[in-house]
Image (tube, rainbow, N blue to C red; front, side, top):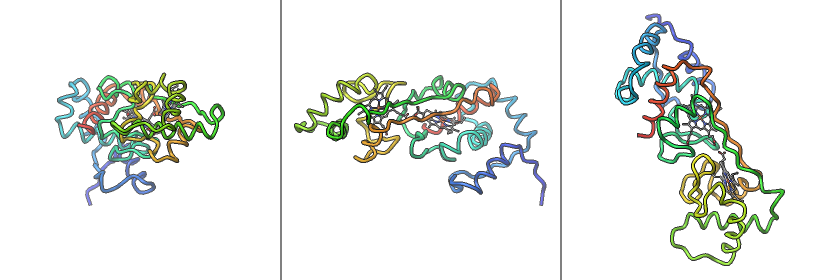
Length: 225
Ligand code: HEC
Ligand code: HEC
């Protein structure tokens, strides 16, 4: 058998594939020598994102970098899991632009939803949950319970989720669509409101070179296009 020298990140991918929940089928293992990776990084570093996204060779290195830095949370195929956003769809907590993605990679992100369990009583919580569910129903008539829920929503939630529930970029996600970072059934919505939610994307600025950040930005952008 021909001996391949694995770059450390490739070795990490192999280790994580064998040990945890990362889906092997969706992420074919790429083996590249350290030499090949560094020579590719040197040529790709200063290229615009569009040409990186169009280059199979660049995206192979991007996939390796994603596998070793991001897949432990976002999954190898980028579809995420409970609490970790799907990067392959068009729903963005922050913006889906290259600038926003690069900023996420460099400095990380913190999503902080305060807990209301100690502020709001059980009955009010129920009313709020039904109003949040109502937000996703287009054109439906509001029940009395939902109307009371709206009063509470206008008091406690509009600053971050907007008056119509469609969210405010960087402050609070859209509550009217069918995408739920923390699950969209009654119990999960109630849980989000009662205990709050706190999700973090760690900063990678100090861990990756500029060329690696550029490649990962291109690769992540490509996941949703
Ligand atoms: C420790 C787990 C973890 C790791 C590792 C991680 N992320 Fe994240 N990422 C998250 C979580 C959780 C969020 C959501 C943060 C929030 O809710 O504010 C997130 C958010 C994001 C977003 C914003 C998505 C949106 O909807 O706006 C992008 C883009 C992203 N991550 C890319 C990456 C990339 C690229 C890497 C690898 C360099 C990475 N993440 C590594 C957990 C992680
Ligand atoms: C200070 C801003 C802020 C306020 C006020 C706030 N939220 Fe949130 N909310 C957030 C953020 C940020 C998230 C996403 C947390 C994360 O990234 O993990 C969130 C998440 C949620 C979720 C989960 C969404 C999902 O996709 O799973 C629900 C439901 C929710 N909020 C409802 C409410 C309700 C109802 C109120 C009022 C009682 C409220 N929020 C008040 C910022 C806020």
